[in-house]
Length: 130
Image (cartoon, rainbow, N blue to C red):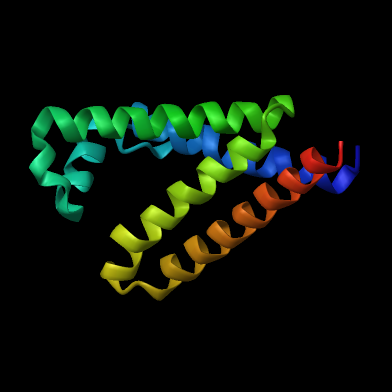
């Protein structure tokens, strides 16, 4: 195993474990919590899901980020972990950050999306070669 890959997995693992926990627990690690996450989802055009629907979606999103981050730490199912996180970043980019017009967040999420997508594709190639 290459040291660079380990560093990348640890970095992204920390980012998404933290992201998942902050969406779940208000105030923990600066977290917004599920109520605020549901409100954000409503404001991005998902209000048609209703209060409980956006709350459940927020919880699922938080748990998926947390699980994917843990998979990265464990060096398991990397194609799926990177791929799912890339999709999450793309949706965040399209639904939240591009509409906000905040170029800093747009560029950060664009970099996250493309990097995660590239890592997922590399993992797919490794799986194909085995």
